Every structure is written in structure tokens, then in C-alpha cells.
Image 1 (tube, rainbow, N blue to C red):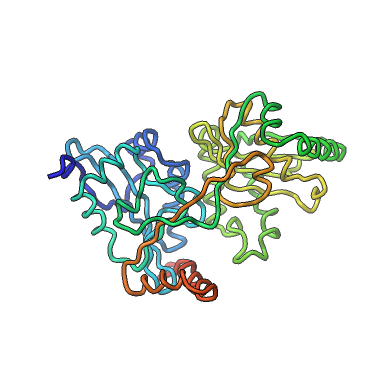
Image 2 (image 1 turned 90 degrees about the horizontal axis):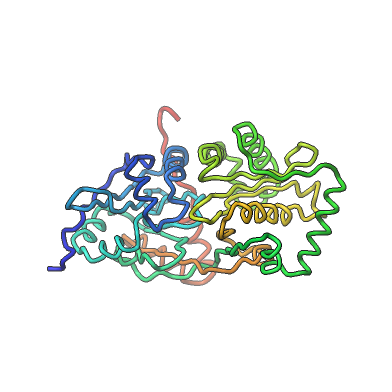
Length: 376
């Protein structure tokens, strides 16, 4: 018998409290990302999951010897069209997905065959299990789930290493020509009035910045699929809650103002010396020729350097501006597993001709099915 057999107990606790002392302690000692932070997951499960008719599926792993919390897999059961899917707690807001535990604990868990089998049993039934947005392979969740090898996604994440002083980072990351270009844009925008850039530090400024962010993002994303998430009440409530509850610790909401009016905003998550940019908005119509977006990111970088942050993480997406600010690409991967004949058919279709692939995606990417209730 393997020495680690019977080292862990695995169970489901759909009412798990992500603000509990034991989870806060687990997260602090884990190798998870900012998107598994207690405030982030508490808001996601309370605000987004009910609106999406997604059912919590929180896998709890405890040390058998003393019952202490060893690992958490924050997951959801979501009905997407005809497909019963299992996925990590994401709902289109989390850029990086990860089990919540240390790498060492994850390795020990993989050696406990009984715990692994128990975990796999608890997840069934499902048609399709999907875990995209995996940043690295230090915790091979596919081995834990008995799933096929992970595959590369068609997008990357980008981050730039910060150094002090700020001017040295500019030289390292941006190059002289781009520095000169932005300096020119900065002079132009200063001629329009009094320009300020700061981090929101009270509920009033956060509310103003979030309302402005929603206003600017609406027209910009109107033509992209089903539009901007921030236009939906539940998502606006989610991001506003994260910004307010995380103020001064987990979240930073930046606001650029012209003569006292907000013209650009950026929301970031603070985690272990890094700030992860999750949402931005700009008055493009009013300041398009001044590269207001680039000036906002430059302002964020300057503030981060002054605070002693080590990394500015632009998260997922291959937008060209990220490399202009010294962002280096990190490949992202995904794990998928079929749990039924319907799931196997969907996975097969995804690998076929482009038109079949798009049809399959329309099925698996459907919004969660909303069940009718007397109170809705």
C-alpha cells in the first residue's frame, strides 16, 4: 500500500464559506492565484452563480489525521444548452484557474489513490468537464481527475517585470521611441485641462469610477457577441463589490480625471507583489488621439513601482499593447474530459472541420440555462 493512501478525506460542501478563517489560512499558504482569493470566490458564488443558475460544486479535501483543510477545488455545475458541464468557478470573470492548495500538498494528494478515486466519483454525473485558463503545470489537475493530457489554448497571458526607479522600467520595457511617443501624448492631454491620476480610496470614488467604467464600456463592446459583461446588473454588482470590499488590500481601482471628471479607469487585483489588471475603460471618443489607454497603463505601472510591486500582469489576451509595455507571453492550457456519449461527441466535433468546430462551440458556450421558478 502506498504510504500516502488514506492520508486525505474528500467531500462536497456546497455551502462552504470562502470567508472562513480556515479558507483564508489555506489560501495564504497556497500556490493559487488572485482569482481564488476569499473575496473573489465569495462574491462569485453569492452574486454570479445564482444569476447564472449555476450550482456550487465545492470539493473539500482534509487531512485525515487532524481534519484540517488541505485543499479546495472551487467548481460549478452548469447546464449549457443540452450539456451538463462541470467547470471551475469562473463564469467569464477569472483569468487563471487553480486548485487552492500548495504544490507540495497537491503532490501528496496525487499519491493518495483512494482520495483521487473518491474525488472522481463525487464529480459525476456530467457530460463535459472543462477547465481552461491553466497558467502552468505545477499542479497537474488532469492527473487528479483522471482526465486526458492538457492542450494549449489559442491565447496567452502577458506580464511585465517591474523595477525601480520607474524611469529604469520605462527604458527596459518600452524602448526610447515608444517613451517619446507617450511623452508627446501626455503633453497634448495636459493642454486640455487639469489631469489627475489616483487610486480610489473611498466608497464614493469607487462608485463614481465603476459607473463611468460601465458607461464607457457599453458602446465599445456593443458589437462583440453578447456585449460587455459590465452592462449586466449581476456582473456590475460583482465587480463593484470586489472593488469596494477589497479596497486598500486586495483590489485597486484607478481613475484618471480631467478637470474632476473621470475619463479612464482600471481595476486590478493585488496578489503577492503582483497586480493583475482585470478590467479597464476609457473615454476613447474624447481622447482617442491622446492614446488615453496607453497613458492609463503607464500611470498604473508608475504607481505600482512606487508601491514596490514586482509584476504588472495584463492577464489573458493577445492585444498588441501588452508587448509595448514589456509584457512577455505565457502559454495557457486547458483540460477537457467527456463523461458521456454526448460529451464525447462534442469533444470530437471540436477537433474537426472549422464549421463543425464553431457549431460545437455554440453548444458548449451557450449561456447557462435558466430554470423557471415561481419567484423569478
